[in-house]
Every structure is written in C-alpha cells, then in structure tokens.
Image (cartoon, rainbow, N blue to C red; front, side, top):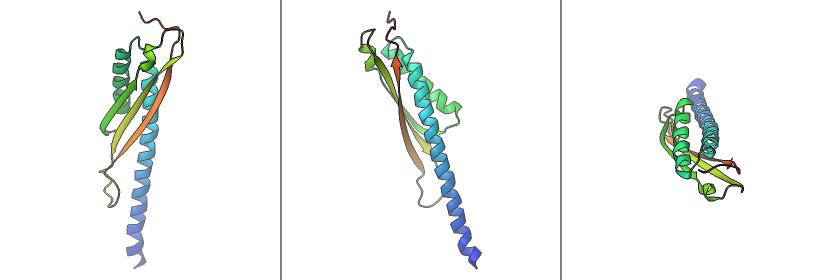
Length: 130
C-alpha cells in the first residue's frame, strides 16, 4: 500500500532532478558558447564580419556541444568597432537558446525553457582596420 503512494512521488522527484540537471548543464554550455563567440568576434576586422563570425560560431558551438535548441538567437553589440584604434573597446555577444524539455513529460513542468547569457571580449587597441 505504501509503495503505491511512494512510487509516483519518487518518480516525480527523479524527473524533477533530471529537468534541473538538464537546465543547469544547458546554462553552463550557453555561457561557454557566448564566451567563444565573443572571443571570435573580437578578432574580426569589421563590425559586419564580427556579427557574422559570432552568429556562425555560436550556432556551430551549440550544435557541437550537443545542445538541442528549439530557437537560437544571437545578438552582437559591435559598437566598439567605431572606437578609434588606440582606445579600449569591446564586443559583446548575447546568446539565447530555448531548450526542449518535452521528452521529459511531467505534469506541471514546462515543455521548454529559454536560457540567456552574454559575454564581452576586448578589441585589440592596436588593431589595424584596413
């Protein structure tokens, strides 16, 4: 009799642990992807190139890390490229990923979760923009 009551509660707890672990792991990976994309974008020679490089790097890195996102959004702040060489400037990349949780069907838990993170990388003050 007690098992009939405790088993569903135990299964619910295990499912919640799996969902929590998946969200935590995805958040950590998104943080790393934002850092990689920002670093790669900071090596570009122009704002347009930085935008393209950051977007390509982020989507490739998310795929290679095994993170299955329903929706991926990458925004790049390239305003640092307008700063003249010799001054400090940076590029910031924000990554947003909607993680699919529908394969863990638990009543009351969301079917997806959107995670965000951003990273900033300095531009080389001695960069050559030609």
